[in-house]
Image 1 (cartoon, rainbow, N blue to C red):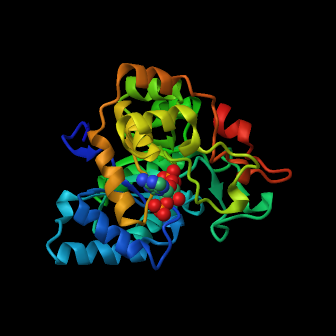
Image 2 (cartoon, protein in one colour):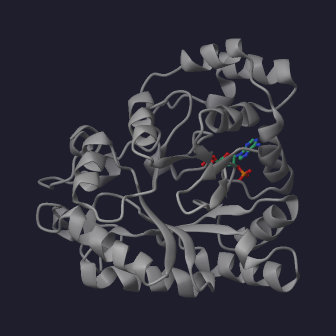
Length: 317
Ligand code: A2P
């Protein structure tokens, strides 16, 4: 499997485990299984509301001698309610406590969006804080402090486009080392990837399988099914694998990390084994032709009547 290399010499397994939508009650076993199968990179977030159960699984896996803390790479993300500089460390500490860890390997600003403190999912515009009032640079500075204190080894962002990254690069003392965004063959984001590569920002692909287990309220009317895409299906048959594995290999092949979510032992193993597939030049060209700028995680759920945050602001401005 490919490894992503960081300036300080740290290395990150390209194929990791996503935990968004992994329910309490099932995520404990998924983490124990994943570690036994060989996963070392686990992607978490405060808002997934399952970090306590993940933390118990990590603790038990370490106690059982399945893995050491040093061998693991644990990422978590600052939720939008903790953007005020004085709240950033609190948000991080809540994740560290839940995960039963002394430090994170990577901590990301989850969205370039700020909420009022008691509004994890604001129902109206008044629950948000416009970024003009609470600029990203203020939140970032507090993240830099967390890194300087040794609470996190690396800091980065998620759901950032090129204009927002450019602004952040111009303002930051410690540069972001990761941008986690939605990526799959229908949303290749080639320009964003090239910009990140030119600026030494690694990229992680989220929702690489199309995130089919999202809540119905987050789904579009007629979403394309990546597993049923004829090109991807044909390629899976050619290689004797599941379409999910073609999608994971596509991401790894482009030099990104990729975090497919599963809570099923067979599928966890399948996904890790995707690293062994060798895509042909013809496969790569055919997959590149599928790009249609299609987002599953479209961001419309941030729009409120009269609110500051719009899909156009999020992805284009
Ligand atoms: P499950 O957790 O039951 O395995 P994404 O990573 O894009 O968010 O997609 C996650 C969805 O894809 C989940 O519904 C997950 O189901 C499913 N999934 C993960 N790996 C595979 C696989 N190898 N084959 C089929 N479905 C998979």
